[in-house]
Amino acid sequence: MSASLTFRIASEPLEPELLKNMLSDAHAGACVTFEGWVRDHNEGRPVSSLEYEAFAALAEKEGARILAEAREKFPFVHAICIHRVGHLQIGDLAVWTGVSSAHRAAAFDACRYIIDETKARVPIWKKEHYTSGASAWINCATRGDFAGDTR
Image (tube, rainbow, N blue to C red; front, top):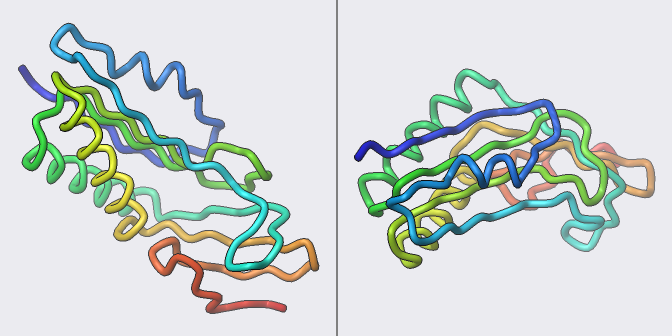
């Protein structure tokens, strides 16, 4: 059995049910998904929207590497991680990760590994737009670093 591994940068809205259906397999008895939504605050500051940018070719190459590493660590059937780029509003789905496996432990562990490594390593940057009118570009890996703040 060959695992299906998909990592992609997307400019269009994500459709979780369609993505989840791609994980279906007779060998899988478990499916774990993670959805990352745009929230209305970060580090105590009210956020009105976000913009994500990525160097897609490099991001997808690193994302594929993460999925391959996860495949070596965890016995899963299929794994998908899709990250949005563009301007997103509060509540929009920014990233979706899903894993199917024979058993739940591998699905949970692989899903967490994939999203954690994606946030840490994939070259995706976000610009937070604050309700005050200020904005700041933030590399997702820095998780809250306000470098480039334009207050």
